[in-house]
Length: 198
Image (cartoon, rainbow, N blue to C red):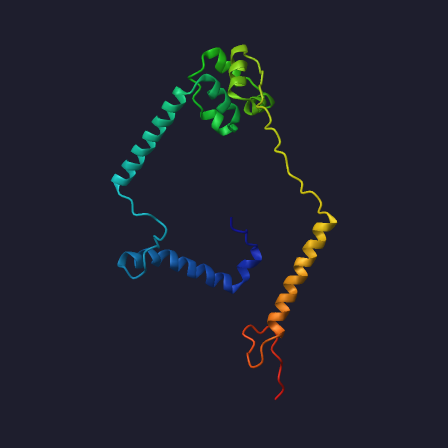
């Protein structure tokens, strides 16, 4: 939406020039396009579709919709109730409830969001039981037994001493390799290179 111009802008000569240029552009742009002097508008980002592409897409959409309808018709009523309870409000409006009879559909459509939440957390057998009784009787899945977590036992003093001995022995062997060589044998794995001043 364009901002309203104040009446003071009519006194501005730049506004007059801007209006004159906009008028010239509005008059001459279609003429220059028709003559081929101006480039046509950019069509980047648009697909070059044919009539066959559109027909194929429509046919594919119809096949997918028919497949979804077939699956929905083959679903047992308890699974229809469970799927309806799990769906959001937009999906619920488009769901096919033909697997249920009229009284079951009426009961399901009258449920509150809280009751639908209970049915969504319920098992399929709980939804079947609720559907038979026409009242919310959820049956929740049993909790998985918690896996036992192994807690490592603390190390004894002997084990700690043995670990220290092994670490010191490894460091000593490393120091022997780096420091003590036979006379005339260069260090093949130098760790410290002496800095020389020139």
